[in-house]
Length: 77
Image 1 (cartoon, rainbow, N blue to C red):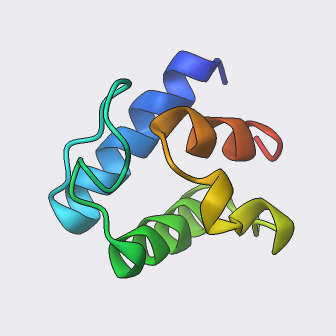
Image 2 (cartoon, rainbow, N blue to C red):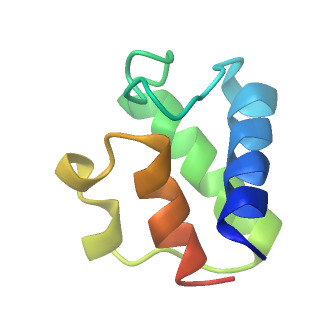
């Protein structure tokens, strides 16, 4: 998958699971993802793509933007 395809898939998962509309310019929090919503999105991504993120990848300080989610997902798909 390309980065664009991964970003589109993550954006759709976030919309389906939480109703949040992610974009490239706002933080995940500004788009409506609080910590619990982010956990739900991460769980759905793991299920959808059939892998598990590592604990180090899920450091909240490193997950601020859509690009951060794309980067860690890209390591697994």
